[in-house]
Image (cartoon, rainbow, N blue to C red; front, side):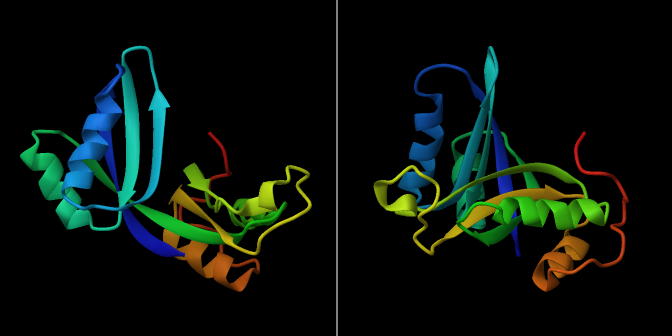
Length: 157
C-alpha cells in the first residue's frame, strides 16, 4: 500500500465541467491514476489522484481552479471475489476506519464473461482514506491481526 495525494475539485453540475478539468490536466500531460466524481443537484465533487501531483497543482492553479489536497492510500488487491471483503475485515477487526474508497479493475477482467468465476490475474487498485494509514499498511501487508488503530473506530459512519 502506497501513499498518494488526492486532489478534490468542486465542479458545477453542468455538461462540460468535467471535460474542462481533465482537459487542463491533459494539456499539462498529467496522467490520472484514479478518478471519482460524486454528483449533487448543483455541484459535483471530483476526486482525482494524479501521477504528477506538482504538475497537476500548477495546472489547476494556473487555470484559476480551487482544490484541496488529502493524503490517501493506493492498495492493490487480486481482482477476484472476496479480496476486498478480506481487506475490509482485517481493518475492521483492528478498529481502523475506512472514510471512503473508490477504485477500478483492469479492462481484461473476466475476458468478456460476466459470470464472476473467471479472472485475468491482474490487480485491482483501490484508493482509500484511512483513520490510521500506517497501521493499516502494516496490517494488510502481513495479513494478520495487529494492534488496534489509533482512532479505534469501527468501520462505517
